[in-house]
Structure formats: structure tokens, C-alpha cells
Amino acid sequence: MEDSFPSYNIKYNEIKNTIKIWPYLDDLSQTIFPYSNRYLSKDVNMVVSLDFSNLKRINSSVGAIALKKLISLVANKTPQRPYKLILPDDDSARAFLQNSGFLSLLDDYYHFTNQYGDLFDNNTITIQKETNVIVVESLGIKKTHYPIYRLKYNPSNGRDSVDKFEEWLDDNLLVRIRENQDVKTDVLFSVLTEIAKNSQDHTESDAFWGFDYIENVITGEGELLFTCSDLGDGIAHKVRTYLAENQQEDLRPDVWKHGSLTDLYKWAFTLGNTTSRKPNNKGIGMTMIIDGAQELKMELFFFDAKSMMQIPSSLFYSSNAFNHEELRRKAWNTENKVGFYYFGRLKF
Image 1 (cartoon, rainbow, N blue to C red):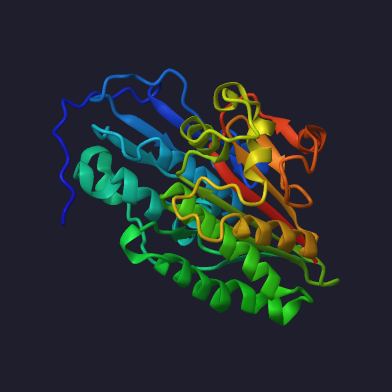
Image 2 (cartoon, rainbow, N blue to C red):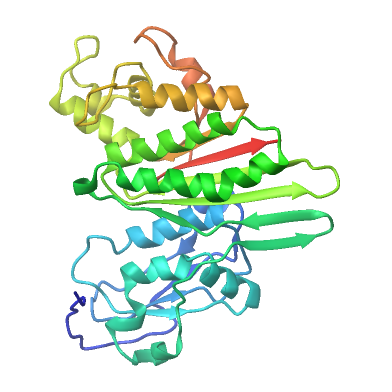
């Protein structure tokens, strides 16, 4: 069914009402804020320019996070505002946005191509639906950027989306790693699919995956970078909400309100604790993620609320298993809300 959109008394200020995308979206540090959007007009008739013109570099892992953050600006919000898409000046960046599926996924939420007809000559912008693996080689370093993968949430289909993701991993990413590296791909498969299941069970929203495979063609050494970014509320918010409604015997009554982030994360990483509506096998998924990451010697982080945290080296098997110092040592304050996403780095 065609989407229907309201009519607007369009107003346009090209200089002031703009979301400007950072130039370098191949650097994880840029994901805290991948764009600048201060002083946007509150007038819903005022066009917002989504400006990629200065984008010079982008990869799939960081691109997936930037994509999610841009989508979160409009997801489930009404009324829908008018947006103008400005493509990168750089040819390689423009090609990446097309081939990775970034623009196609973004258009599913912003509706550049069918929302306002030929307004701002948007009819001249062709957004391709097909995706392609992007391979770039320079000075002996080969980078393979996989198309951004959208893990769709559909409550009526159970784990069908996760099953399709598992097939995609086997047919695309893992087959490449098996051919070239001595990596326990069964363990890597377990870590990635358990993250996908956690996203589906806890956030009830779409998730976006980015994968970059980087290798030295001379030595064979390299690394896999990946991210998973969803539209959920994040661990801290979910735990606060859950504890406000479900008092715990071993926690003070006001922990949901006054507990620190480390209080909330410790509860979340204690075996048997879960906020999921599906309590069977609770805690098992996080156990498999943590144990698998340790077995692979993988660096695994998550960004949440106003923090970045390295996944602990083991699950908390009881509420008193570790003190807060262990968590605080591996947590960083970002000062600003960052949404929620995983970042993993596997060296080989």
C-alpha cells in the first residue's frame, strides 16, 4: 500500500535548517554524534536538509550506526516533516551510500523519492535497491565492506528474521573467513546470532548490522569489524523500567530511580536476570555472547545511555560475584546520550 503524506505549506532555508553529516564515518569515535543538527526549526512545514555533501569516508560498521541514528530522528514520529537529500560531492562516498544499501534503507523512513514528488529536483535522485559488496585495495591492505544488513522485527514471524540473518552470515561473511583465516567460525556465529536474538527479544525493533573485513594481502593478518545498532531504548532504560515495576529482594527499593549505570549493568549481567517478556532460558543468550567473545579474544563493547562499556570477562553468576570496581574500570562516560549499539573487533 502506498504511503500517504500530509500536504505542506513548504518553507525552505537552505543555510539554517540542515542536518550536516560528519565527513569521516569510518571512525568509531564519530558515532557518538555522526551529524550536527543544532537550531533546527520546530515548524513542521520548514524543510530539513539532510546534507551528506561533505562526506569523504565511510565504512559499513560505522555507517550502520549513523544510519540508525538518522532513522531514529523520524521513526514513529508524526507528523512527518519534509526532507531534502543532498548527496556527497565525493564520488566514492556517493557510490558507497548507494551500493551498501544505506540510502535505500534511509529512504524507507524519510521517503525522499515519493513524498514530495519533484520538490527540490528529488526526482533526479535515483536510489538503487540492489546492494553490492564493496572492495577497496591500497598499499597491500584490502578492505571488504559488506552491505548494511537490516534485521527486521516482526512479532508475528517469531525468529524468522534471525533465521534469515543466520543464512546470510553463512553464505556471505563466514564462508570468506573460513577460506582465509584460522578462526572458530562456529563460535563467531554463536556470538553474532545471540546478539541478534537479544535485539529481537528485548528491543522489539529493527536492527542494523555493519561488517568490514580488513586484511593485509602480504601477511594475511587482519581484522573483522562489526556493529549492531537497533532502535530500542537500551539496557539502562530497560532495566530501570523493569525494576520500577518488579521489586527485587536483594536490591534497595529505589534502585530503579537512583541506581548508577554500573548498578543497572551489574543487574543485567547477573545470570538469571532478564527484562525479556520471554523468561525461558533467561540469561543464557548473554552467557553465550560473553563466553564466545572471550574464547575468540574478541574486543566487544556496547554503547548505551551516556556510556560506553567493554563487555565483562565473565557473567555475574550471583549478585555478589563482583564489586562495582570491575564494571567501573571498563566503563566510560560519553557525556551525551548515544543510543544503543554493539561494536566488535576480531583480530586474526
